[in-house]
View (cartoon, one colour):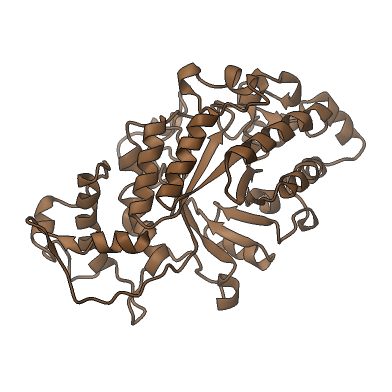
Length: 438
């Protein structure tokens, strides 16, 4: 399939011409090359997901990481727990049924794209509280109470709620969800989230308060949750991906003894190469999604209302424009990132690949193509063949013309990728480059 894609790219011009007399030997540097899409904060239709998969395949990527649920909505219809979607989705027309999932998974198979589900927990589960308020702490609370410090917040952003690991009912519901999701998604990998535990969301619950009063800790509560759920997921013949927080968070994390390395992969998103290094030094396989390089939603301000960050007089440093992960991640930033930077050759073997992530606080189907492409294509080339030439020099100069032309190919194939140059540059190769270093 990847070879056929390469072959199609040898056809050019109008009328069509094809290069011939070529011998191509090609293979990817990294086995895991993906795009993550969040469909909880804003809904994306099945047609949008299929188009995304088609574009993923065009770019020789092979993973669609589907972040399906979060605190904002629960759009997945889980057969054994139908009330989760019935009460947690934005509406009947904004749900994914088992038949929808089958369509997406089979389409992925046709295009050589693995579909990996993520059901984030125990944090990011406010939407579960609509159906099961007794198993969710701090659900539907105002996320950052007035006259309180940032450390007293109840969530990282509006949309509160975390599963209560001390309530036995939690595990009845979780195991039903996991079992059904595993049945719907055949991929070997299962993403179980475990990021951004907000301490105060747990601390306001009476059960947890009682536990803490007996000298228990929040990390022990997370360990209780992981110890009750990870073995069950593994028993279903799945390798579990967690966000890095489960091991590296400064406040709430678990001991490595709860995370068997043969069953767990950690996905990095903070601190660039620093956290990737920490993951592999701990002996875990890593998927790199550094927000400094691979977060496609960054640089568009923020969705928080009444934000005084923007109320700055002219001439004042505007900082990151209200975006926590600003500035915007250009294709050049993405292309030039080495995901094994600072690692030894042996450590690099634990990095199985990378994913560019589109969180959807400020994105929906209307901007999907332009937010992902062609920046996702830049990552795709870097993860497939690297970003250096045979002499070890970065090749971003030659990549500019290639990526600009490729963007037009994507457009003709029905993908609304945004332009990176005027059309004049494509018609005059090399003329838009500079010969001066900046």
